[in-house]
Image 1 (cartoon, one colour):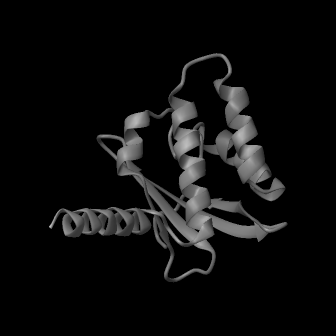
Image 2 (cartoon, helix red, strand yellow):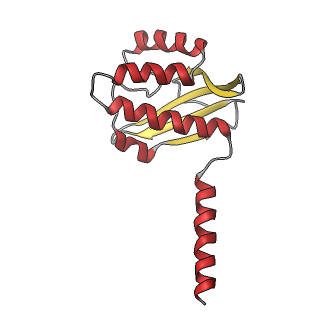
Image 3 (tube, one colour):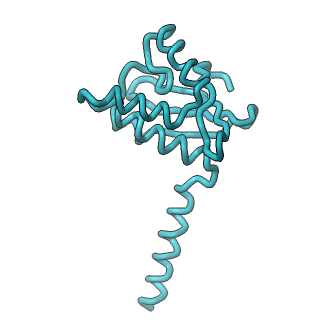
Length: 141
């Protein structure tokens, strides 16, 4: 009887882990990026901006980095989080979904307690790795 319960427990644990790990490599990359990025934005140490630049350089294409600079000037906020600051607790509400209407586009959303922040990103594969190609802050997708 113990063996049956043990096997059942292992089966449930493996199944639930498989359901939490997305099969789409672009979603996995976005989850990894946003977990690191939001965590780093919430840090208030002197290395935070340097670390954010490294994250953007690693996960974004050159075209996206240029667009990022332009959007920062236009919006006076960080377009990758659609806000000026962040908190690690926002990661609890982080969702990443592939667009059903636009190929290679993903909707990132998280709640900051008051507002649901939505960021639409185009993700391409560059040199075998998924990279953020474009940022669209419009909600319609």
